[in-house]
Image (spheres, rainbow, N blue to C red):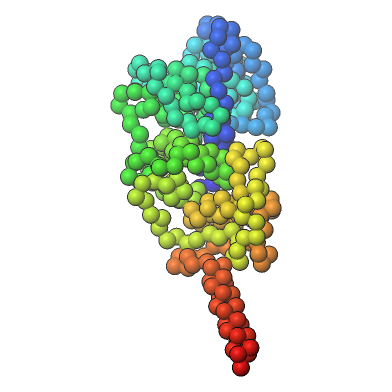
Length: 334
């Protein structure tokens, strides 16, 4: 399901966004007894026709729909239904800020451990504490259903904050161990390191997790080097079928999350499990300057055909050269 990819890319991109500010006056709350408005903060001006939304899934509600609903005057700011509309308005791009402090960290409203860290895996900032995480925009992004606290990152990851009756259900490594290379960076799908990918997967339930790893078309347990893990033979992705001409060339730019060489792209390709993902991602790498010896592009070999033609070609060339040398020597000695 490509929706998983879209959601995860938005979420990981937001992992670098820090705390929105916790000083007095940074977040201007409205009078709880005043009429409900589409945006939670007094300083937030609604956008009825947004060009970007944090939530990338499907929803029947538009900004105009929410505006029309809350404008009836039937709700006040402190109503839960009003806050749900304000939460959705932020998620679909109508407002720039969510209704901070509305969604409790623990689903049942219990106290949480404020000093616990949430391992978002950002290369640009330290992991936020659970208290700081309440003021991160990324905490209010939903995975499937906008307008409900239960589906936000903040409550899906409640187990990080010591909340009762919640536990992690989905893991990067099938045996629930930590990957041995948490800092290894994926510059191709998530734009995150393995710790960030591990965090994203941890937000899903057991039912959602089943088959989720396959939806990305990449075996991240293999890429992130999970302990004692061996990749199943689902086929093999090769950047250059006839060998690579410039393996040390850095094809990424300053805008990319990680600096990567053509050889590192091939290293990532070894974890790709689907042909369409292989061809799409590796063709992008070729377009950015990675060159193949024979001018060909990426190939995906079906299950059982893991030996690369490049290796076979190289061996054949060596044998041919040795045979020619032998004939020459025989000629000189004749």
